[in-house]
Amino acid sequence: MKSKTLLLILTLFVSASLLGACGAVAASNWSGVAADQDMVYLAHGSFVYAINLENQQELWRFPAEIDRNITFFAAPVLTPDRQLLIGSYGPKEHNLYSVNPDNGSIKWKFDQAKGDYIASPLATDTAIYAANADGTLYALDLNGKLLWTFKSEEPLWATPAINDACSCLFVPSMDHKLYALNVETGEIRWETGSLGGSMVASPAFADDGTVYIGTFANELVALSAENGAILWRYKTDGFVWTQPQLVDGLLYFGDSKSTLYAVDTAGKEAWKVKVDGPIATNPLIKNGNIHFTTGTDAVYAYDLEGNRVWQQTMEGLFQGPVISSGERLLVSPMNDQTALYVLNENGIQQWAFIPEQK
Image 1 (cartoon, rainbow, N blue to C red):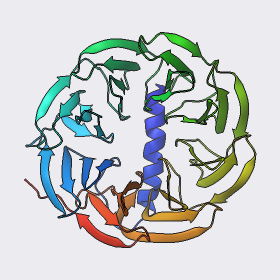
Image 2 (image 1 turned 45 degrees about the vertical axis):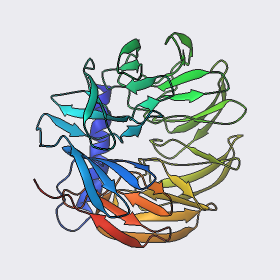
Image 3 (image 1 turned 180 degrees about the horizontal axis):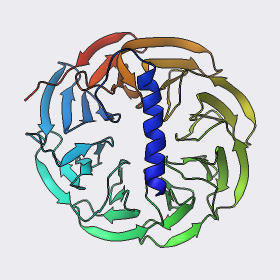
């Protein structure tokens, strides 16, 4: 029930943006974008596209033909051994695919999950950790063989993260708990009590091992990586749907009440500023600016003191993250025609990718 409630909340965020815009936009969710040098891999609706950023051409799409049983939501992930991992978002199939990033051919498929892949998997040199909405974290080897599973009490919507300070795998859950697991076995090293709200984004880590995570209890929480002890709690205006970005001692993040924050590592507020809509995906820190979307028809850049630097308005509604690729900024609108916009670092549109209808 919790997952359905949160999905309804997200839908309401998006619907509010739709109602505030002119015209109709036929889309149900934002797209997952991943960049690797001059390539971008875009999970958009019924396909994942491989696009060359230099010649602006589609190299391949997965699947080659439309399959109404599959849609894609989470950003693809390129592993260290060059597999492209793609999790499907139903409506009938819930698979994790490994495909060749050069041509889109399938290497292997993991089909034991019962729910949607809302979060991207985490890939290391030796293993893949895939969180699923069925409440299970699946640990696989690089050939897709199941190593172990960890079961949460509620769905998992966040990508797990590894903290080198304790060699722990951190799993945020919608059951209001943060779990620290043994990376090799999946055994629980510690778990928090209820933090008062669901967690749907990855934690951030400081060099000293401190863990920072946002919750749907309208809080940013700092914990010890060693034992999960709460160090401090910072109260926000709304749900924290994003992973905080730690830069030079400040944590930058947004919330569902249209607020952008900078909080120091002791939990003291440096500043906060109201923006044009809810921030539901991770901000990008690049060249001294904070880049993000708010479900409006624009992409924003603010400086590290909370001042707006630029705003770029384009066709479509933008709720997904801004991705960096060299000197480019990439963003995908909630729009069935234009799938990707490429901007320069000043927010000026360079070109747009519109998939050929097949």
